[in-house]
Image (cartoon, one colour):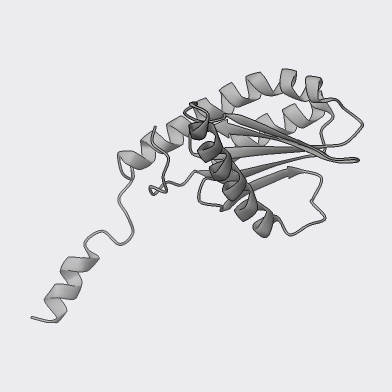
Length: 161
């Protein structure tokens, strides 16, 4: 699937399944927080402990970080890096690609290890990829129910005739 900002949205059921998957991961890994960010820098969801920073600004920087690292990957002959790890003194974060259009950010501290985060994240990434692929495919095929504005253009044209 191409990287881009094609129009898509998810239902309440989609959001519930995504949130449940992330909550399960956070419980199993003892990580603090998970943020989902689309590749354009828009915050999609935050699960777990609420961040003490501005999550909207963080989402923008996350997308820029991932994009910059994609360019670094190309310089060394790779197509991209599908995950990144940033280690701090007290806090660390692991970023992973989901379905080529979403970035999953996991924030964790010394209550867990990078090894445990990576181990538990594999199945979560697979599940999220499946969920988001369904959302993207549904968005590409158009809405399954008639839009509330269907026919509005025709009605507006009739007003000016």
